[in-house]
Image (cartoon, rainbow, N blue to C red):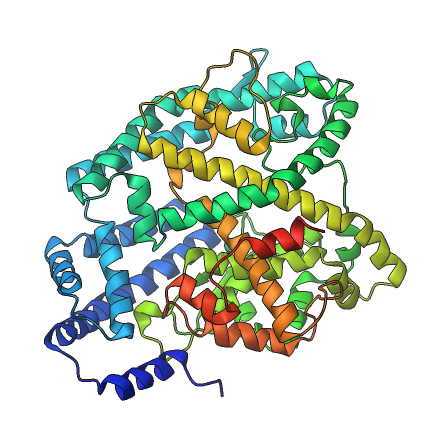
Length: 560
Ligand SMILES: [Zn+2]
């Protein structure tokens, strides 16, 4: 049997302390929740199954069914009368009982984000679809010849001729000019919708309804900026020397096209780390199952329900889905026995155990992760193990010599990967915030100022093109990107806490968590069981003794 529910403990305490009896507003909310859950729960399950089936089959009619069901759920949350009732309950400040107040907050936000005038919503959806279509059908050209994104990537990875690299990079940006006007239009519409419900702009609305405070995020990103400045400068200098030498140019002549992807968001493959050799004769599914069982998290039932191998028509990516918040959790993968899929399997099963181990006593509305980035953090925490030398040695039964070989490059690689990503995530967060604050400003110039400030990459002389618009996320996943960074930060904070306070070790050098049941038990009790009973930052503070802080991300990847 599992430990007593945190939610129950909390309720018992509040009963004892205030001699609890529900007031009229609380009774009203309770009734609303009962009716709401009775309506939404079967719809959510049906939509989750439809989505699972569509990903498995790839059939257009299955995807149509998903859109239809998603729309139906959206309609529930756009009901004005119900929103009015929730607003009244919220403003009354009479809902005191914590477990009810949490549910009220979640419901209020869900309804609020759907209170867009139908006419405006329709225009936004149509323009969004139009932009997405342009993104998927546009092909850049090199010397008048169409090229695919993959061809561009190949050139940026391997080409040593700077002129050819430049042409490939320019081709990657051409889509920007095609979609920029539409994106600005969409941003203005989103802002208009946000102002109608009382927010200064859409960025603030999106963050607020996701329980994120702009000031709080600013503070975290500012601290991360300060702490990574000097080490990033040093690391980039070293990297630039290698990149310049590879292309036979001086370091001062390095341009954006000398990095290995169009936005310099990934690690250039200059310290290549080939770990596939260690995985090719293993079974990544068995390894993952064995590892999770070893830390006391049973993924057997999840794997039985999952769809793990490639098939014609099947979604080529990977995801995890909680079908019913009652234990039916599945992952979809396209497994091969290599390091990439080892990471993905550990990652998706991280999401899966979070979902599986929510306490069944927690109300249905709160039986989900505390935040989208907290589940991402757990997934990243486990995903990182696929290149962790200690984990690899134990799980793959490697010799000490093999482990030393891996260690020679893996630390450097992890550091580069995380630093480069952090600086890139700062560009995304900062630019997007300013994009919504004033979409009329000179965005082309703002983009390059931002890139220079955070990534130390300089603008090609005289360039005045909407290079920012070539990043699809501004159009299709607005105000979301920062969550990837917050996930990395929390993964490191949990790692630090586990190493220092749960395993009580001086250093994480030999920590791969293999067989560490204490780690599984800690995550279950402090993170998974609570679901969304607490605000994400309260959950983090209860689990680690501190609210979210970039300190440990910096400790793990920067100050090594
Ligand atoms: Zn994920």
